[in-house]
Image (cartoon, rainbow, N blue to C red):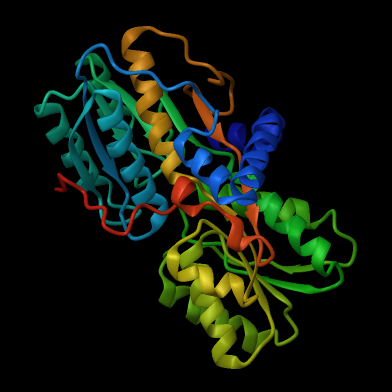
Length: 364
């Protein structure tokens, strides 16, 4: 099964990312050094990951994403839209499925994109499975299919741009082990059926076993990725396990809910999570979050456009991986850990958070 392939190959993908992670970290350090260097980093919108090119023709891109409830997906949408304007291609529509599991809604949106005559269909899939027939039909119609942000189980994807989810879990476990190895960790694994959720949890649990004295309490997959669910689950966990020093969550809305529960109960428990939104920044600063992994949605969106142009024009596609980890070629952005110590120097406007006045031009 593909799930097993993805899990077994994630460590190798992490090795592939090593050089890229170092370059990204270096870029962060340069951006934090002085205002002048920060401005220079802003000018390099792709941070040296790929050389930007302009399209020879005004290709049409259509987009359907899971939701726009957090800055990760907003960042991808903004990155696609802004890079398209810079690169001479047109975004004809950006649609949202509404939530994970809303596959039927996304199928309707994909059919709408087909009727609009798009050259490239960008899909942040609402589910890991079930998309192969519609992707195959789109490919037969000459439409390139791009997997955005998270993996999807179909060989009829032209290429994908995302991140190594298992390495995110590994990074979070490593932060806990460094901070307090002999401690208890409660876990909120996240919703069932989302492959990225499963991989992060697997990475976290496997890495935690390497930390002597660390007691990780297994959790059950379920619920959603809402703040209220994170709050309720964390409240229950802290009542059952008042000695828990940390709570693991796979993404930031669950993490913020857990952080609220910690504050309400007057605990000193810290949260580890992934992705950054504006509302979480004060919680990272005050220490309720031990660490958060950056998920550079804006960079992903820009890479999607740049690689789509190359794909359409038969030009070289550097750093495109082709192996059994996924059933299609893919590009990965390296994870970067953000802590209270470096939160003020992190360039959110380049990597995660769109401008405050940004609006989607075409939204179904």
